Length: 126
Image (cartoon, rainbow, N blue to C red):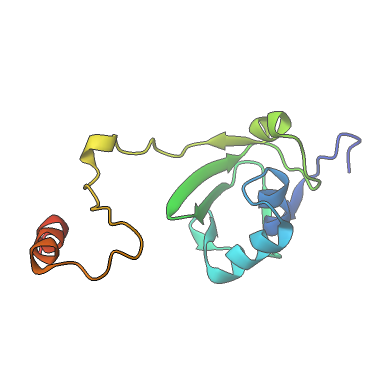
């Protein structure tokens, strides 16, 4: 291991935690076990390895982040250093006007009326 904390390969769960894609290592391992982390297109087990040049896809909160390993680190690094450890290839989110409008109801307002249910169905495309 080099003095700056870099190595040739490391565990998938450890790397995605170290570059701040997950808040804790246990969350990173759980995401790997659930199939939310892919390395070079294959489902990654927590103990799988990553090396420089590998493409890592992480699904968090309904969005998928696509990153390429630029530097392998085993210990958690600061946000400014984490940016240097990966190349972010995530496509930009769609513009706001392209997203369908979601009707907003006050919490506890009860069941939607028949008119509101028809509007909701129309928005969903049914």
